[in-house]
Length: 127
Image 1 (cartoon, rainbow, N blue to C red):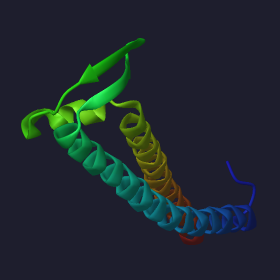
Image 2: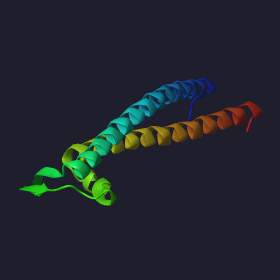
Image 3: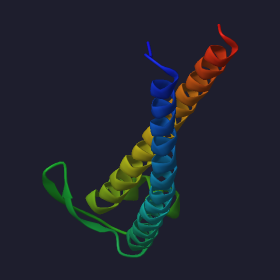
Image 4: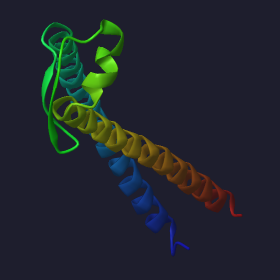
């Protein structure tokens, strides 16, 4: 697979550099996820409050509808379907998916680093 120990070393160095970049990206996405969660929760809470106190006026399934004051027990469920809140949730879920993809790539790179180190050790032992 590799022509020399130097090739293995170069590949190992590249993988370690990639791991450092991925960890930095993960830190960035942790912050993005926290911010997206914050915005979603703000939108959800304010919308629940408005549903309880004022009801809802707007388009639902292509038709204009008005709903009066709503019981607290259903405000969260209703609020999640209002486009402004649903958009915030979509943004949050998208960032969460991107963060998960980075975490999976980190796991993959760690495995690759381990395999390269094992291969280098085997070459050193003459196997």
